[in-house]
Image (cartoon, rainbow, N blue to C red; front, side, top):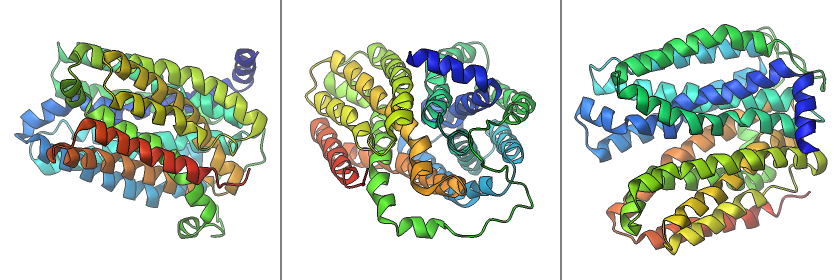
Length: 399
């Protein structure tokens, strides 16, 4: 029944739903899992240490998050097609720039661009547009668009590793830049078929929106802080753990191959749960699910801390995928339920920027704990404690 509902929605709005799906898929070129494939390459090319590269990556992530917060709200005042073209051109430029191996400053700027236009704008475009132009089917639309994330996680690592065996890393990044430019006309075409479920007007460059809701107002709103930790808990914890997966593998004596291939468990459970979560949101709303989105992840972190064996890593990623599926569906719909759709881009720009900040901060903190020789069990249990506190905080939100 649920699958039939998704097919019915896809038959109604195929172009616009594919726009959201492809936006999340293309965001992968700026996501941590993709850039991690080039970590050793960049370290060798620029003669960096792991700690210095980690600092550069964190700085680039913070810079991208700050710019997203300032620029992302413009999606409320310009047309979706214009904003999409700006994002794709910037993304392609950053991908081309990173091939220019002349100075570490170029690497810093290129990484900041990839984080801003990839992890930042692509997801922002997809989730804001699905949340704004859908109403009765908002949950399912957000869930469908979000499936671009796990699909990229499943196919791109193997594809890129295969390409790197025959091509240089710079040729691969030139391929990324060309792919983004070739995809732009298609994306502009797809976004033109907007749903009629809501009365949301298409912004134009002449649109003037009264500053009835500013980002500084959100930071003073109690509801915002009741929700935010529960939504940021997943990216905060998951990014730190996945970036240090091979350190954990060494600590717990797991095989590197078994550790790396376990990402499939995350992707599969994420897709499955997002399908159900989208339907639940359309039935009962997002407010009733907030907080529950991080319980599976918290359970997985606790199980992982005991180091039962490689199977505990697979189980952790499967539980994290369940949380990610719920998290993705909620993050695209909850803010529209709380603050409406008129200035949804303003809200999501701030939220997405804070999410980007969290994914830059958590690997740095875990790196410090590793340098301080804190046992992995205590690291993981501290993460679990933070998730439980975020869940208790979210329970305060009126349903």
